[in-house]
Structure formats: structure tokens, C-alpha cells
Image 1 (cartoon, one colour):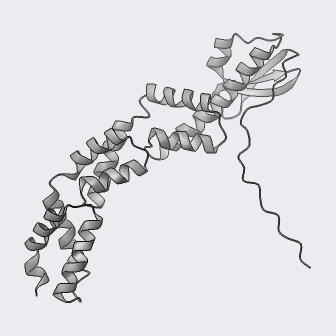
Image 2 (tube, helix red, strand yellow; image 1 turned 45 degrees about the vertical axis):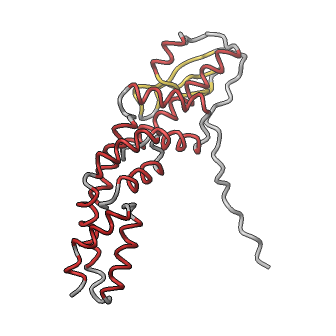
Image 3 (spheres, one colour; image 1 turned 180 degrees about the vertical axis):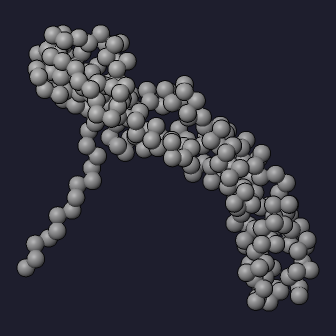
Length: 231
């Protein structure tokens, strides 16, 4: 009998190091691949990797005795560095919303206070801007998928954009609803040429409704392309 396969444990591991609250700092070393960080050694062993600026802010030095508070501060700095690096790498690939970054870091088992610190820093550096993200995302979606402001707003909300930012960006990107509906209808007709005129109208109405257009806009758009449907 074949033994059951062991499934890999995908539970995120805690990002905070267990630093003793006794002993002393015995040295510092270079952090591999990161010139802005350093390794903190406690009793001759690697205890944490923190940003150089945090080492200075904490006033860490060789032979400095550890306390419970200091150990917690060093652990915080270690976790903050990891969370910030992960968030920066994610933003470098694609613009993100605050909710996206928050959810991403939580899934990586970072604590909420550290997540908040990282988000505040990214906003301070202008790397995280929900209003700008909403504008860019709405424009991109509208370009690829002409649709109503309601449809765009719904898509933005799914990306974690606030109701206020989503509504504002969607309205600006959607433009004239009738023009957008006519564009959708004209493109949709290409795949409906083999259908009977009545079937075309029904399917076209459904297509426009799914893009969030109001009933009167749908009716006007269908009338505008009626000549193409009745042939």
C-alpha cells in the first residue's frame, strides 16, 4: 500500500527573530547583497539583519547589553526591513493599492504594526498613492474594455480602492457613456454576424448591460448600430 503523500506546509513562517533579552551585542557584519543594512551579532551569533539607519537610531554598539525592550526593538527593525523590501519589490513590478500591499504583507505573516509602518513610509516616499493608482487603473481598464462608470468603479473596488477614489476615477475615465456603449456594440457585432437580427439585439443588450450601462443608454446605442444588425 502506497503511503499518503505529505503535503507541504504553506503556512507563512513568522518574520520576527527570537532575540535573547540577556547577553550583549558582540559585533556587526555586512548584509549580503544589501549595502544599506547590517547583521547584528549577539554573543557571537547572527541575531538579526537591520537597516543601517536603524542601527544608528537605536545607538547600537559592541558590548552593549541587551534588555527586553532593546531586543524587541531590534526584532521590529529586522521585520520592518523584510516587509519593506517585499513591498518595494511588489510595487516595482506594478502599481498597487494600499489594500493590496496590506493584504500581501499580512499573508507573509508580518504583524500589523510593522505593516502600518511600511505603508506609511511608502506613502511618504510617494510610492503608494491610492488616488493616482485609481486614476491610472481606471484609464487602463477603460482603454482595454470600454464600459460604464459603474463597471469601472466596481473593478476598482475589487482592487481595494476606496469608494470615494473609485467613483471619482471611474467617472473621469469612462467619458461619454453613449460613445462607450456604441464602441462596445460595434465591436460585439463582429462576433454576432451569424445570428438572426432579433438574437443579435438580445445578446447585444445583454453585453451592454454587463458593462454596466443604463437601460436608456443601451437602447440608444442599439439604435445607432441598428443598420448593421438588420442586414
